Length: 345
Image 1 (cartoon, rainbow, N blue to C red):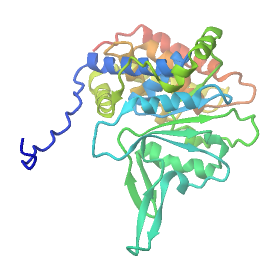
Image 2: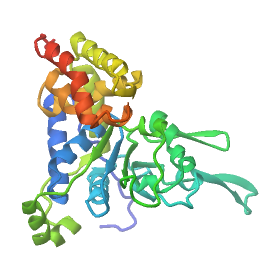
Image 3: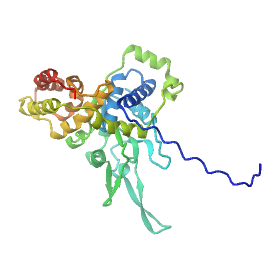
Image 4: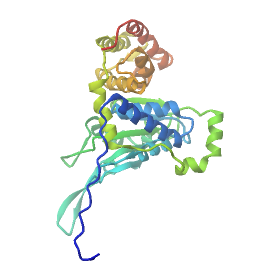
């Protein structure tokens, strides 16, 4: 063969198959769940909630003491998502270790001067990623915590009066230590409200700890993984399907409004639920219905997610008791009426 002969141009990359139906969307969720379960032992319930937040286009705050696997879960999620856009230079996952001396520009990026061109250029910060791990977010000041507000709410960030778009997939999974630990700052209410779920992690079971110790090398390296990763396009397709294919009956929306009213009227609550919390609740409910292979939202979905969505948004009165008990009391009548309603399309 003549080595000087022109070679054919490389074939363009084959695009990932588009998700067009609920069965395809459900398969994506199952594949992602299996992938995470192979890397994170004994956290099946937390994994399910993180996946729901991801496909509902929300963000997650994980709380527990150090060494409980919060960071491992976040890294496993980022590594389970493949960017199928070859021209895309956005990292799959970036990590920010929040410390007292951190600056907002360390998160969002900054403008730097290039002496060779005599021009200023924007240097993107770690916020430009598909999955951002905000590690120990409550170990830095509220000024730095607020650097995430615009990004989490609008998928954009403004630096030196210039607004930069983030990727459509942008997902924050933040970790924090309990507030009774030294050197922690409470998250402002506005920052807490940006998180769809706040999940308090507990110790895993004895059997799960033994399984982790017996398979430590495999879990750390990911060797032997049998589940294929998911792509960025697949996740975005699942998000689009939620709104168009998972039915939310008027009775569900009425129940959410009544629950919010009950929290505002309760003498055990100083500040009740905001309208934004109800808006964020809808895609979360649709995501859970999809994960249960249903095309409609029911009372079980509301009951399962109420504490994770509402718990960190309520300000309780002194002596009010546990937030779980307050939320359950405020939801009781509305959920009973909802359970008797016809919710299918």
